[in-house]
Image (cartoon, rainbow, N blue to C red; front, side, top):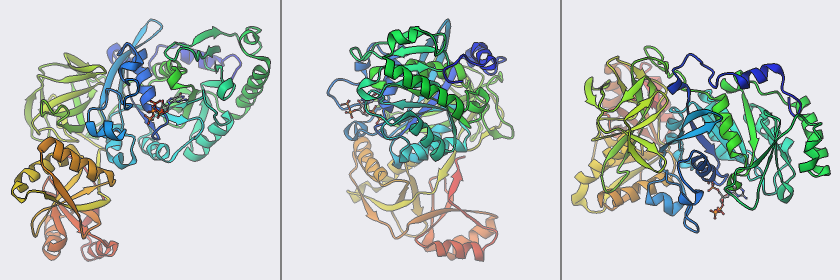
Amino acid sequence: IAGGPQPAYIRAMLDAPQTNRPDLPPEIGRRRTFAIISHPDAGKTTLTEKFLLYGGAIQMAGQVRAKGEARRTRSDFMKMEQDRGISVSASAMSFDFHKGDREYRFNLVDTPGHSDFSEDTYRTLTAVDAAVMVIDGAKGVESQTQKLFEVCRMRDLPILTFCNKMDRESRDTFEIIDEIQENLAIDVTPASWPIGVGRDFIGCYDVLHDRLELMDRADRNKVAETVSISGLDDPKLAEHVPADLLEKLREDLEMARELLPPMDPAAFLEGSLTPIWFGSAINSFGVQELMSGIAEFGPEPQPQRAEPRQVSADEKKVAGFVFKVQANMDPKHRDRVAFVRLASGHFERGMKLTHVRSKKPMAISNPVLFLAADRELAEEAWAGDIIGIPNHGQLRIGDALTEGEALRFTGIPSFAPELLQGVRAGDPMKAKHLEKALMQFAEEGAAKVFKPAIGSGFIVGVVGALQFEVLASRIELEYGLPVRFDASQFTSARWVSGPKDAVDAVIAKNGQHIAHDNDGDPVFLTRLQWDIDRIERDHPDVTLSATKEMM
Ligand code: G4P
């Protein structure tokens, strides 16, 4: 495939209507909901900016990253994040992308990049239909890329790869592709092929469309010059590409054609093949081609797993689920926003939906769409969109909103924390305030909070150590409460489930080890795997589980 004219079946796919489910209503078929995954520093923030720039959401890339200032995009709200340069909370951005005479609606869900926030990231990935994996051309597949990739794999998410920083010295193209294939066990097909390395990098050959894309180093926000080429023997190539680079390009593409699989949209959609684009986000190079790839290959909003049946995007009735709750996003408003992924239907502002957990109707009168520049009232939204619903705590992670049907969306887990600490208010008179703050963070999913069955105080559990610091700083910032964390005698937490008598027996016998989470569910705390094994042996009906499904 690489280089030469495309086989007919691929041409047919590329020319086909831009959706792999042509039966979907056009408003739904044009939606693309995805996340970007990467190791810190690979260029996720820069790429996000360029997406917004091409999406017309911002005038100039500089608007999101003021020069000289800490590098942050508008998707980050918290001061903490600015100070540390990490993205603590995932948020969503919507923007349009034009390709030919078609207009796509992209919903980009931002994932926290730091490894301490993997649970949050996992939940975010339950809300998207595809992921863009950004890797640094000099570093290849890094630890965090690998972890996030594994999460995508569990969900069979289609993955598009962007190999960034090609303007700098980077690894050999085959080596990069090999590393992805080996380390991630996924087939790779080149969507573009870099020409020259480092300072000699001049652009890419667009393998899918037989075009030359030439990078302009002078203007970082400029769209690349495109030259149509009728194949690798086209004499026009020599007008733009120096002889030595051209020879290498021809050789490389010849070899790629023999060694690498062709683009196969079906294999991409099932997650076994990733197309790779090469570019330089900071030079705006390769970004539009990547966006075109997202538009072309999709996928459009996918069916969502639920009980007792899965939910298809084109169903007339509205259904959606909460995958994230964020409190105090704007300290001025002290609000709490539940992020809802719409799984089906056409939502209109003011609609009454059923909150399935409480079986109560809820009028959604002030939903928010996260257009990159600002929050905006959402007058309407379609399957695939992410809307924010301000609320006072009724909406929790995993909750379903429907037009009456008792659906339960599945696959949104809560992981057992790997680190436990006791927590106390700096001022003992403020214990009640602390409890309120902790409950709020627990519902938001920012930490696990356990109330020991015997004694006072709380035990807080997190997945990564940095979360303790984030928590302490947020409790102080948002509640004006200085807190102290102390070492806890426990290191593991397991949810206890099974027939009521059996669970009660475990609780009665192990009082010192029992606590309750913020839903009131019993948890067994220990520092020894041996204890866990013992309970499972003595109480065969009881399950001690490291995950609990939200809801
Ligand atoms: P992240 O969100 O994945 O952590 O990465 P981010 O976009 O913040 O990029 C990390 C660093 O890499 C930044 O440099 C950024 O400018 C640089 N970068 C991003 N894309 C490219 C690229 O295509 N080519 C090159 N050469 N560099 C790129 P920094 O020095 O940390 O920040 P800044 O001072 O440039 O803002």
